[in-house]
Image 1 (cartoon, rainbow, N blue to C red):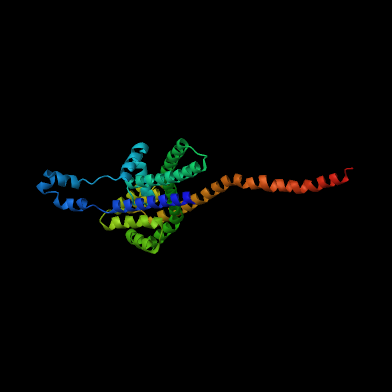
Image 2 (image 1 turned 120 degrees about the horizontal axis):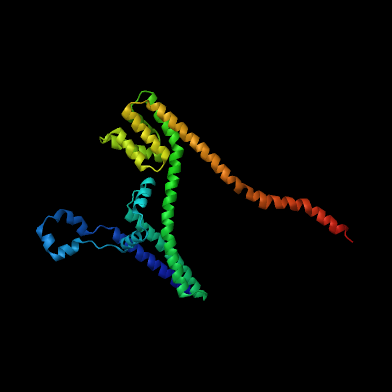
Length: 302
């Protein structure tokens, strides 16, 4: 009971310190808020006290995030996946999240190591090694979770795409312009693809050409079908080709691709479906078939 109370008090104190420090780091400093308004004053650059106050200290988490960035690299890939997952964060903020996931893994491994040492079955070197491994696993797990977020969002986009394309085709076939049809579809629908189309509509309303806005969508997305859709709309608008026919054809292509993917997935899952049949149903069937004969032979044997 004494050890439990001590560990609980230490954990509560650590969590309180972490929460206090995080709250203090999230509060903007006075120098950061005032410096943009007094940057042109001569005494700011000549006074050492003001110059020292204007330089905001880098936090420990940001330094750790920069270290993770230098070790892992791949900032372009991370930025690309953040855009595809529609996560409004910078690469540095993502690296800080990776550090936090690693710290959580480190804390869990440290707690396990402390409990093992209290029980007399652990060593300091083994606990430190376990903590280091847990930290690395936490950092890599956040990166893997980002990849899974990207895949989940792209699956939702593919599920929404045929309906959105058909709605656009119907609106265009009814006589509306591409911009009005896009506005109608964005207002009447909701989903990940509608969010991307809403950004395209916002760019168009700010003065960007329709073809350029859809070309940007084609370059930003990681789905070939959506990129082909955006390029087809851009080409149809620029060259004046029938847009409704293009949208109907692309919706049919997406449905055919979804059906083909479903068939391929079912073919891959067929092997796993045989596992319970072979290892569970078949042995029980053989047992029910041969067990009465074995019992009968044992009863008739003198």
